[in-house]
Image (cartoon, rainbow, N blue to C red; front, top):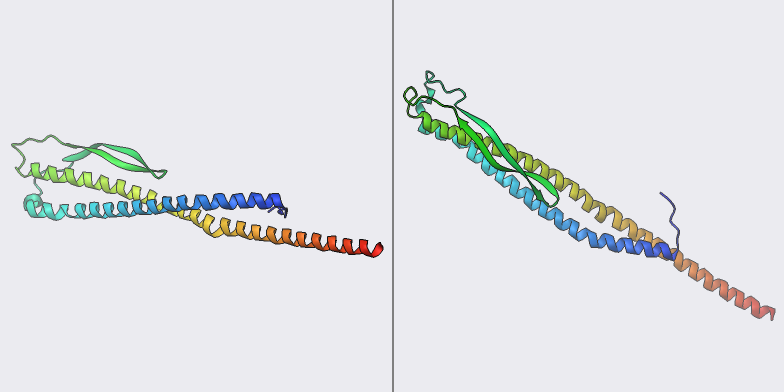
Length: 199
């Protein structure tokens, strides 16, 4: 690091820098708090989605006990055709937002399949949509975790490093300037007393 000049212009520059750090820190801290709140909401949304997804299997078992019949061909009954994900900008962080899930039910003969296959197709569609929503919510939460980590590091940089370092530098410059001023006063008094002695 370059050696600082201990003069008034450096003091002025450091004072301005300290002022800008102190003005910037509250907005940075507010952004951190808002991102943390958004992260908590994303975490709760993910937990809610996982709870709903976990409830689908018992629901199917309760309403469709005949599903254990292996003679009914059900492979590829439901499949995902497309997923619409849009980006949402939250406090400068781009987050995925699930817009729509396109699910397609394979055509099957109503006469050759049991009547409960329709209900099973609905449950499977719901399960696929839930699984994709969980994946998007997990990605969203991971991005928010990363954003909170970065913004916390920045807040700590300002709060624990830059502001104290600048304050220390200002104190050092002020001490140096006051020492120089005192030395100048002493030199002036000595010169004045020498001048008196010579006259």
